[in-house]
Structures are given as structure tokens and as C-alpha cells.
Image (tube, rainbow, N blue to C red):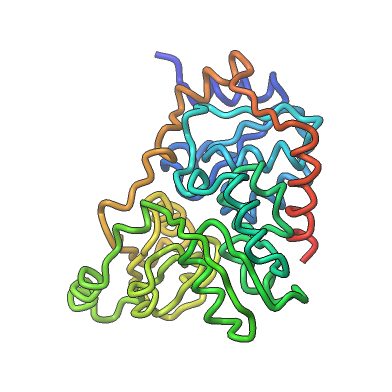
Length: 300
């Protein structure tokens, strides 16, 4: 039986393609990717891609960002059904109405959003750089979309600004509970609880550290602790274990699985490369407008 990883490697070379994968992808997808990272890491990588084709293993808005930054490249996804429920919780029309209600506010858009929403925003941010992005703005009033929990986390760091939070959320990060984490802390008394800022506020409140997925890696590497309770999508544990083999990582919930992130398989990667599908396209007007909000973030 042919080795699918060798077939993918050969096709990748033939197509002059690079494979980018998000931290939440299945372990076998992360292991064959050329680059693995969070949204900010992959956006930065997308600025300097030499290959003609980018195969993105993640959810749709992430592939959109790559296309926005690389309009001349062919950007494909293994499965176009890999969407983001949070990104779909706000529409351009809803944002227009929100802006009418707060005309003096700057719109800060979490990258977990669709291109047409980014196009109406002043600047994008990630969970890694959200505080820095909002702090850099002159405006004292902020419309933060679409994640209310990341917005709340940033607002607590910047009390001099007034926030209007959109009531969006990540369903996967809603599975973490304060009660379960307290029970895990009893089972692992020396473990540090690391929570993603998309978690609910009661989870954030008992966490030892709140950070993005890339920050989780650096925190785990630099910490003297040997055990960590991780409150984010389960795919993250693979990279944490791979880069910190001498430490133990305990899932904050066994149910923290994003079904959209798990739609990508090695077979789908092979088929996408074979057929040069499924292509990501962004209308040029939307692309130009969204590019401005992304570039303003990356300049920071």
C-alpha cells in the first residue's frame, strides 16, 4: 500500500506548494505540515511565501487571510466545510448597525472573523496581540468583535477605554468549567492552569496564566512546573508535548474538540493537491479593505 505521506510530499514538490497548519489540527496533519502555528504566526508566515500554492489546514477565515495577503498565490483548503462558528456570529450588516450606534468608536476585529467583516473594521487583532493592538489606538471607545470573552480579557487590561462587546463566542472553549478545573487541581496539585482568553470569565479567573496558543508554548517551556492543565482545543496538546517532551499536559476537558478543525485529513490533503482544489477567492474590493485592517495589525 502506498505511503500517503510520501505521495503528499511528491505532489507538494510537483505543485510547488507549502502546507500550513493551525495548532488545533490533528497530530498527523501537524506532523506533515511545513509550518504549524496560531493565527498570528501563520499570518506572518503568509507574508513571505515563495511557493506558488498554499494548502491551508485550518478553518476558512485563516485561509482567507492567506489569500488576502497573497492575491497572486493559489490558496486551497482540504475541506471548504471547515468553517468557524464564531466568525459566523456577526455579519457585515450587523457591524454597520453597531457602528451607527457608536460613531466615535474604533472597530477592533478578532481575526476569527470573515473577510467581509474585517473589511469594515479599523484593525484586526489576535489573542496574542489584542492588548497591544487596542492600547495603540487613540480612540477611547472600542467596538470589539466578535468574541466577547477575548474582548473582556483585553478590557480588563485597559480600564481607561470603554468597550462595546459583541456577544460572540467559541463553542469549543465553552466546554471548560471552573468546577472541573478545581477538581483537576486537586488531582494535580502542582499543575499550572493555562487558559485561552476565549474561555469564559470564571475559567480565566482561576487560571494561572491566560495566553494564546503560541504563548502557551513559551510559558510551558520557561516555567519550572512539570505539569500543565490546558484549556484550549485538544489539538494543542500535540505541539505542547512535542516541544516539551519532559513535561506533562492534561486536557482541561476531554470534550474540547473543534469539529471543523478535525475535518482535515491526510486523504483530503492528497486529493486537494492532486486536483488543485478547493480554491479560496476573495473579491478584490473586500480583499483591499480587509488587507488594511490586517496590515495595521502586522505593523505592530
